[in-house]
Length: 287
Image (cartoon, rainbow, N blue to C red; front, side, top):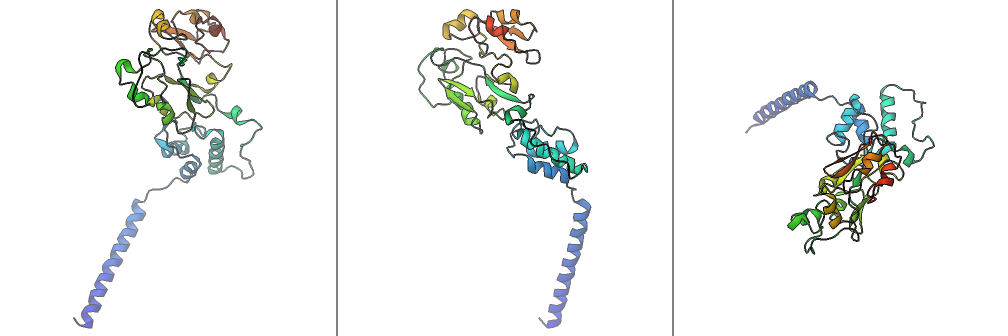
């Protein structure tokens, strides 16, 4: 091959490369996706757990909703007040707020006081500890509620709606908010991030989400039982089970408690925390 042929070939390859580069450059400008800078900054503020507790598909989905004004800055239950303050600062900046306006990150209140009342935390509807609830038989197998629930009777605990106490919820919680105490799962409300993974992990469905204030001592009423059996059947297997007598409902001045399927239920929108139901409950299952 002579020199002239090599030069021609190199020129052709160079021309093709230049043409392809021009086409790619034009295409990238024509089809590029515009990035919402506010959304990017909001996403950087979020913790990145992607738990879905906010109701959106992960932190990316929540960031997009906040940037569009479709979700409140405090929608992330995991991040709490500190993350809300950062997001508000980002939104203020995006809206052209004055740079000398300080972010409201510290108003003198504690983290406990700042936690939004509308945030929900997990609550275990069972008080059937080892000394209060009976076992139907001795279970031999893996210490896992989901596996044990496939054994005869749905597990070794005589109450078909009681906590099995083998810790499937503990394993599901990535925030260390749950521990097993005397055979029953106990939730630390201040560590709970409302991710609801424990709710999904419980095979007996006895973990519910309640308002944060409802889980506090002296706040609103909580029923610590899930049994739907008749009273005599409940008493036969557990000393602290709800017997569905209805005394709590009759004593409630605001109509916040109803008894359905032999178990008391609390309407947290109506409950004022007066304690009348707790005082009247004969088995002390309302706290």
